[in-house]
Image 1 (cartoon, each protein chain N blue to C red):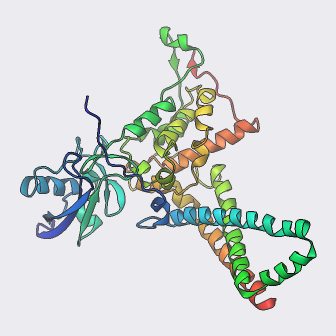
Image 2 (image 1 turned 180 degrees about the vertical axis):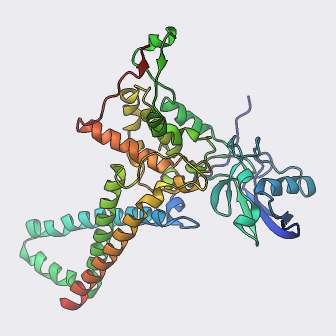
Image 3 (image 1 turned 120 degrees about the horizontal axis):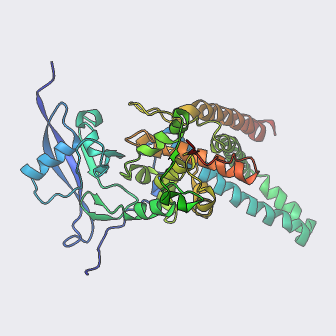
Length: 256
Length: 146
């Protein structure tokens, strides 16, 4: 039988309105919490019962869209994917994702991540660009080839990894775990031939080798993408390339 | 269009100085950076001190060595050794990780998602124990044996 009793839990929420506030402050609201309630449910309750001006970003409510990433009791998580009582039965503190500018209250500006993500060319690059004009053949891929990158393709761009990364905290130019992991997602894809194009982007200062395995990106990732692993595997490819041992990919085109 | 007014929330040095709810590897990350900075500082001081022999001769060198042999500088010597032990051994761990040896391959993620952090955890613990043993031996050598 499920526990239907309510308990009052204080929610300490980061508040910042750029139109009225010079500095941010926190406000505490009491939330009636029932077993199974998520932090997102708690925020909805605050908005309907206490303060309608509270702002945050959300959409799907099921850990798919990646909109509601926020700092919950000191750890970057998705509010929709996190049950209040799993975090604490005493108190909850909610703040926007750090290492991103704040637009208002719990809404971070993720643009810097999207720009860097685009920078690493997150699409399948083919040496022969005219292939896309001749859609007469398939790119064949074995289950093993699919498994080599599938884990890293589950990224929902929530920004939790970027918020948890200690290198992001001090290096404003660092590409960050999300774009770097996506660089490996394409490197590991048997259809991709973009290693040489991405190499100078990854090999620059504040690029791939600025990761020193704080590993928090992998711990906080709500989709099991394991960016820290992807980054290390990408480093391995760069080292193998440097010493001339990187395996070249075949075209992947199925002739039939 | 009105200029966007946003609040900067980059954590800065706090991002790796404050532990918070982070894991063991995050503390190793911080220790690695602090010991690295310490070793670079020591290296520069070392060059400065040893160059006094070349430029100042024995008249400066001998009293300087007498001062550097005192208790305060012995503690400094111990800190340098401890930094060397942590940075060197953790550096070996990082090389093994960066070559993809200690992280494992891609897997199909199934909840609760296992991560590469768990794969390399035995290595992180082994390296930490070895560093602790080296530090104890170093303390014995610096403070008791000599």
